[in-house]
Length: 605
Image (cartoon, rainbow, N blue to C red; front, side, top):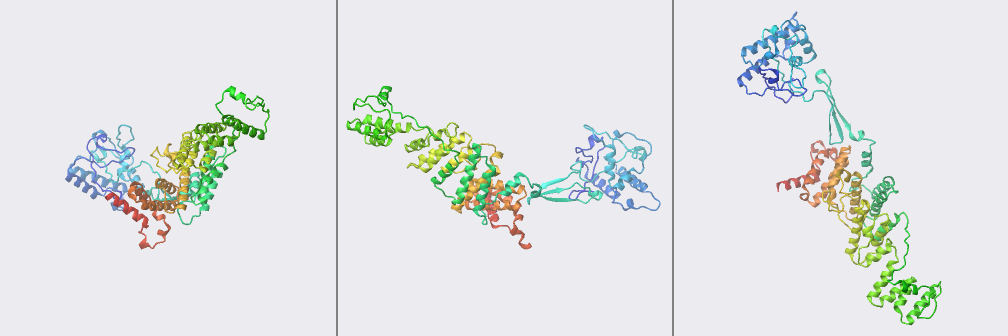
């Protein structure tokens, strides 16, 4: 039978061999309509003769019930002979079998073979083709069955046309597709012609993916975070769980990741605001241990003879006394005073620096010339270890980028957290210098693969978020490097962490949002829909659409169109829409209508 929606074309077959006359589909043994330029009148005459003869089963009532005493095989053969004689009278010559088929003499051995296929539901045309068409790689070998031969009919046979559309697939199989409502749709392999009812199954993707790591990660997150019924305690609890279960504190990267989650907890607790001392306290809490920094001898620029002449136990030519080998603090200060009695300021400074009287030395040098003050100050800082946070503070106060900002992240240098803490808690007057020092430290950490630590520094320096394609931007998703492949960059955890940061900003400024982040929220919404959570996905689309309407969608037309497209497929998952009366169910949310109108306006403009 012809399928609904397809035209029942009259079939034409050439007089040449089957290899030249029949265009076949691969693995399918039913011919397609002949596309040659034929006479329209011949085609209409042939089709009319074909329809008048009712060659197919079910089209002629006598095929089902005949006169008493008449065999079904005889009835079938009479219509067959009538069909052949009609075609011969029209003289078209295009429906005959090729002479390549040969002469097959004799009588049919199984006169009821066609009747068997007729009763089984197969069309006679399909049966005929299956008898003399074989599966070959390069050619088809036509063979006449025993029940069909030229000798029986007295002339060349007409091949039977098949009005049905060729099958798209050679075998029965299950067809499936993913529905927008979080379902997997299966069209089961059935044979309706044999009485098997067609069956379509709907399976919930949430039930199918139950227990998988991806679905559990999506379900554990309390998003979208912009909804009104969310309490910030739920967000803080989620961050604490991430610290407990997702961060390996035995590794440097695990500690850096834990630090980011703790920063989000701090921001959420303080409604998105913080000061440098709060962050410094967080940094020092995360330090595994306080490093012990070794003190060094001051670099005073003295020669060996001058230095030896000032050692304990050597005769002092000025006072004429031999200083004791072990001196008390009072004796040290007394000698410093005696040197000043005699006007020996340079020797007094050297004595004070050698005996760690840095207060005396710095005050005295400050009342002298600037060169002497710089010399004493350099001697004081030279006693500190290179990786001492005090070095970082003094270098920053001196108007320089601290060396820690250029060397941190190295195992031999030590932990970077105390250096950042001292810079955040003791900001100098030059705000640009402070920011440049922190950004330099973040760049140094990023160059050594410490992405989470670098992003922590960027947040302290108020560096804005960028886009994945702009590699010059310092960060696009919090805690994830946009210089790697997108599949590794846009991980679900990174998107969730970024949404929490946006939520903390909204606690301080309710109307604020991160525009570059909206595309990742759309990606997250599509993942929710793929895992059978369409209601949450629609809520994300609503928040994205609302943010774009504040910004005006013309600034991001592609993103706006994608949001509209996904929301149109998910809108039936809205519980409010399901509660509407039937006459009003065609209505859409206001934000979707407004966003679509803006997209159309942009396209027209």
